[in-house]
Image (tube, rainbow, N blue to C red):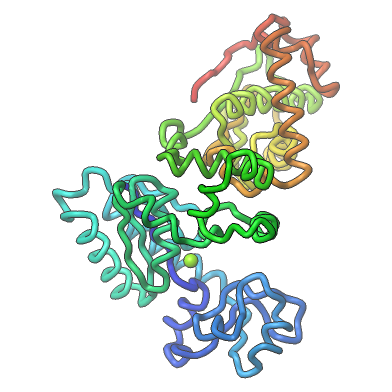
Length: 398
Ligand SMILES: [Mg+2]
């Protein structure tokens, strides 16, 4: 069982916790009305005026001039988020924070300590309320996806458990908007087909729904039948690293090797249909000093994008100007490919098609049948085999 916990109107709730006089009022965090900002978070009182996150603050001001506009204080939000994470961690060792105010908790095996799921959820809600003075909504279900939908439906300050037997009766009457990943474009297409509820969508012939939603329809069916992000639980990170036969100071060689290792790691991500949200770069210098640094990115598995992020880190790590002995890349914090709205972004979709084609060719003709021009230097340093370069110390750890 999974429990999805999501703090309600998080930024606004923190402001209200810090300054109780803001409670019960239309409050907007994101910028002042005369500035060019967007609403980052709106209190439920402000939402009654049609204000929602992502809306320009100027427009929000027109809808509700008496609303209280705040610039926001990200330090306090991060502090509250950390406390939230600590509390969740006292209920289960398996907590997956997916954003600053939202997490999935695997509650399998917590029964003995905390009682049945609803009792645990009630305790958790009370603890968050007492310690943080912030409302939280909680959904519980067999999969993360259903727990997320249940959580959304329970808002604000709600608690909803959907048993496996009730999954379909819970989902059927909901507006298709409730499905994760359904965007405005999909909504428009479905509206034109007069499809409003999930039940109506599922009653539509497959070929119609597939034409309307493309691949996304498969994703919907996948999780309706119990599929989940859970594949991400089995693998925590994919990493590739190698020690050089001879320490080097050549930037050309270091970057080429880093690109090659990134390609190998991304190739594995695509095989597992995973998208990574963090890239970590590791360098060991000739004096054995080891440094590593990580950065967050939009979920993806394209070496072209990940290399860009990694190269920036590499640049800062190489400021030490010492000979390099080992280079490594690790990709972590995964999403299941196909469940991210980003698959509808044109550039990524193009890279995606290119890379999957690349993988296919490499299976057939060997990994180095195709290689980026800027890794040509590797040919001079490593033996080329059908499985790729034969590295000094290949690491295939996951
Ligand atoms: Mg939230």
